[in-house]
Length: 165
Image (cartoon, rainbow, N blue to C red; front, side, top):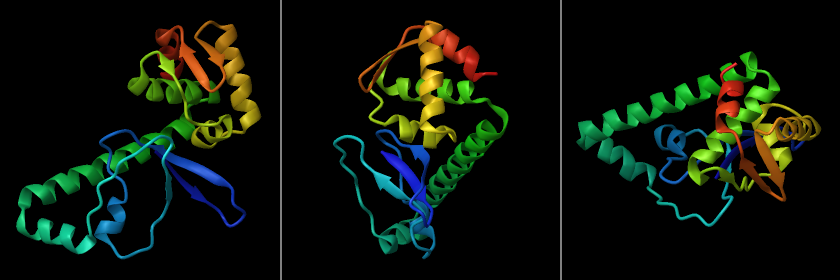
């Protein structure tokens, strides 16, 4: 699932990409503020819903649930901090490589992105044209091969080296 925020002009920034078992909407359970993002399912998805009042009642009764919630929030803050670091310190090639590696964890070497190049660009903080150029560079270097909405990772080690820059 894609978690994104939009500005008043409708421009979208992909904040995170969720996978099976991830939690979403946790902030809305803890405060009464409006939702801060829009979540879009990129494939068939089943979600479990819990009412805020029921969730808070569990936290009141169960110290382990409270600790697990704090750990979840800590992971969320760490993930967001890592994204900010990536945007500030990594060049575009490294950010695209890292995005592809993250997506490949679920699908093995054959990555069906389920994302458009525009969405990948939004996720890595770039334009679609520059992401297209980077994908072409990675293909010419033999790290990936690009097909219709499919990217095959040919050299994961090369992508890891690039993502670690």
